[in-house]
Image 1 (spheres, rainbow, N blue to C red):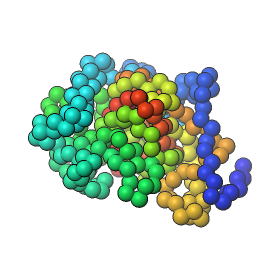
Image 2 (cartoon, rainbow, N blue to C red):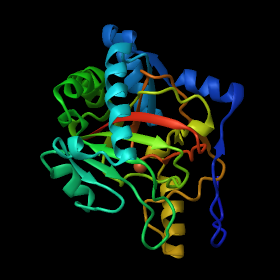
Image 3 (cartoon, protein in one colour):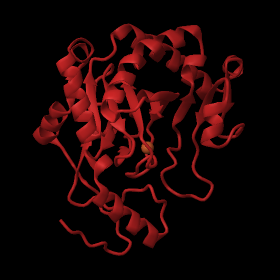
Image 4 (tube, helix red, strand yellow):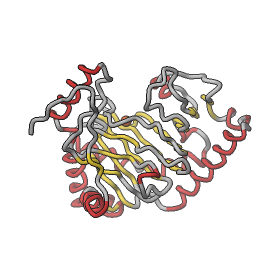
Length: 293
Ligand SMILES: [Fe+2]
């Protein structure tokens, strides 16, 4: 189908809801026990991820490690909120709104310690800042208990094997993050994380049951849709936008990945995705793993 690019206007995809959304989620889902025990389920999951760019693994984590991480997270947030940061400073680099110590994604990735990065509005006022979000790089370095719980959540050997089956090349863990969103409204619109082959796994530590909770949204199959990539690239060039924005998604459906605590979403980051803006009182905690060649 041919689409005309109308000057300057972004076109959002249709956000699936109700029975359509449930059916789409079911088609993209596998139970963790089946994935880890049955070769047939493993190959089926690899096929879903290869074709659709996104997979929901249900009940990937039992309650105990979830409780352990959430307990440590709640304590950490309370210390940040009340400004009692002495203890935190002994185990992490703090990048706070009024005191920035590190800049640049690669520097966050390369540093030896955990980094607690409290995101702020962009100085130039551009949207998509995720202002208010607490993004913790290398959360496994916060404490031994956290390291054990993070390891129990991420299932790295199994997921690496799955990604090898999907992409036919070995994928390595590049960075682990913990995203803590509390009423974050200014989320980035649909985009891809570059054009190289890159996957992320997201373990939900809290339930994400409706749009106000700020679900991860994905436009299935855009990771291999060259036409849609071309259309967006042309639009971005004409408008002077970042080349990785996906603002021309007319005619496509986006799926909000509603999940329960303990579920895991895996996605190809070449596909169009975003975090939905949250309700002011919403809380969401997600453990993220980035895999790259
Ligand atoms: Fe992204």
